Amino acid sequence: MNYFFTILFSLLLLISPVQAQEDAYSYMDTDEHPGEILEINPEEFEEIFDPPSDLEDNDPLESINRVTFGVNSFLDDILFDPISAMYVGVVPEFLRERIGYFLRNLSEPIVLVNNLLQGEMQDAEDTLRRFAINSTVGLGGIFDVSTDLDIPYKREDFGLTLASWGFEEGPYIVLPILGPSNLRDTIGRIGDYGFDSINWWAYFTDDNAFYSYTRTGAQVLDAKSDNIEIITDLKTNSIDPYVTFRSWYTERRRGLSSKNEERVIETAQPEDEDEENLEDDEY
Amino acid sequence: MMNINKGSFMKRAVFTLFSFLTWVHIAHAETNCDAAKTFMNDMGENVISLLTNQSISDKERADQFRTILENQFNLKAIGKFVLGRYWKQASDEEKQTFLNLFKETTVATYANRFKDYTSEKFEIRGCHVEPDGGVIVSSQIMRPNGQTIPINWKIFEKKGEMRVYDVILEGISMGITQRSEFSSVIQKGGGSLEALNKALEKKAPQS
Image (tube, rainbow over all chains, first blue to last red; front, side, top):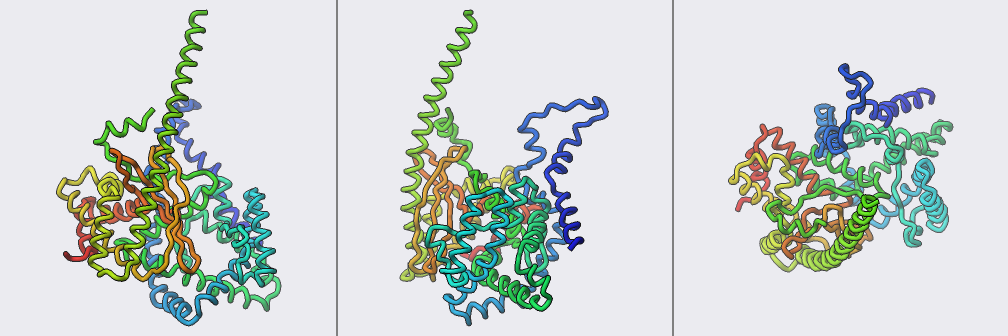
């Protein structure tokens, strides 16, 4: 377990905000005027360090990622897709939904840990109530009674917690089998694995490893069968599925990690030719 | 003394003027917001009833969907946005070809994608004004199995007419997704729009 934390923390150090800031300011120490801090206006700063289209620039490992992406797609085609198609075909929707809710309920304690780490006490209370209600009235989590009581499920994971602490995304990474991620979310996954009581239970009682593996398998199956439509859509409609998945993942994670403040998404604008019309909107 | 008085008078005048203008702006924006909601509600219901209508032929559905795209979306602005810096470098002819292919692939992708869907419900949830003067209308589609799909629409009003400029599905902007896909295709094809047009041509239905 010691190794586990050593690796976790050294990886964390890589994307720590302090490090990133030092990188950003290091150019200011010029030889000509040692110690002088260069005046730089905020717009210029933004242009240098936050280019408008940053999705491409955030993928230094693209060539390796593309290989992993290809292997994953191949595995999906020959292994996971047929299994999920079988699962969807054989198991009725009602039962699949029960299984999905059951698995989600088991992961609720991880959400709670992350709520607490983020200091979101209201969310922590909601999660605790969800877990208590669904585990009892919801018959061990197979029914999501809490959502009907207006306490909807809110996804949290350690990747999002790291984001709330100010850690950068780090480079985009395609993980084997698990798919799109980035450095921060990869560390997040390791963290969540550590928060998971079931894994600890399996770790200390050797015989129970079987349950842990079974659950992991069921989780993968559940996740794959749940998205099957949207994933096939993304794959078939795209000229370059790799890029579509990269953009899709990054956008989605940014949306999830900026839950409290309104995130303004850059979109198309009315054309420039219509100056007179634009002026109406100005003060 | 004179100076201070003058300064504070100016300050007050500017402040009053500014707050008045802000108020006018907000009032103006609010009407925009409500109108955008009505616009989206009408369009959403139109699109859903069209896309899930099983009694018409695929071609008819595609044609009607194309008309909606042409009239309710600003395809030119969206096309320009998804091409990013490559828009400026392209010739007028290439641009025209691209815009046409862009429209046709969109029609081909979505028009007959949802015809097996039944009893989907479309609901407007709210709206807010963005700093760039556009309005975001948030809506959701409720599937019969209880799943909800949140969709946000970015709307600008231009010359008294509303148009959709982006569709944001579960927090994912379709415009940004396509921009990164297209720019990668262009880059790998040597930096010209020609390469993208060829790739789109392969995808578009032959007509």
